[in-house]
Length: 304
Image (cartoon, rainbow, N blue to C red):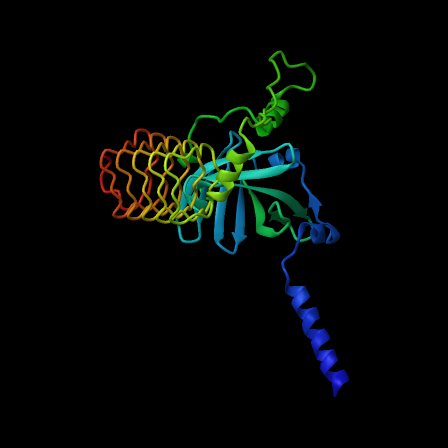
């Protein structure tokens, strides 16, 4: 009886392991090849990808100038930008979907299955995709005509456009400068910023939180009056009921943030990103929203 039970336990474990998500290491074992930046460019530029994930199924068109346009199976549309990194990653940034976050993936090609697989930075499979040449859903008309700053993608494009028989007379595009300047902040300042990420009801009056990473921070009911939150990343942060009187939120990133019942009187949100933020019942008397992104902002009936 015990041997039969052990057999079924082993069989169950085997079944569960076969159903677990594929990782990038497993993809290599399954005869998939990671694409280099140049190969990704050749695959997607001026072409469409029919993509599927647990939260998305639709078509994305990649213009070689770095713009993208997409339509899902429910006919919802969005536009955005794409780029390639020195680490051979394909990065996507939709205007609205995924709260406008930048998502980067390594791309593997399984030629036998005629599909691509997109892996996140932690090695988990996210998208599967098929390449379709050209603009499958006629999405190019939705794109902006401007080209983004110089990048790995543009370097590849410029190299391909040069004649191999004659050297280019134009100066090569400079490589992207991603160097981070050493921080001049003290250890105590950095500690404050880390602790601020989970501090409901805390008194942080006048605190310097410039450029702080406060993604999904719980600051419900916190007193942030007069705080300096310029360029802080408050994506999907909980600021419901928070006191933000006269706070400096210039160019703060607040997509999907919960600002319900918040006190924003006199706050400066010039240039802030409030995409899909919820300001229901927030007091915005005297607040400044100059050049702020108020697309799909909830609860802000009129621009103050």
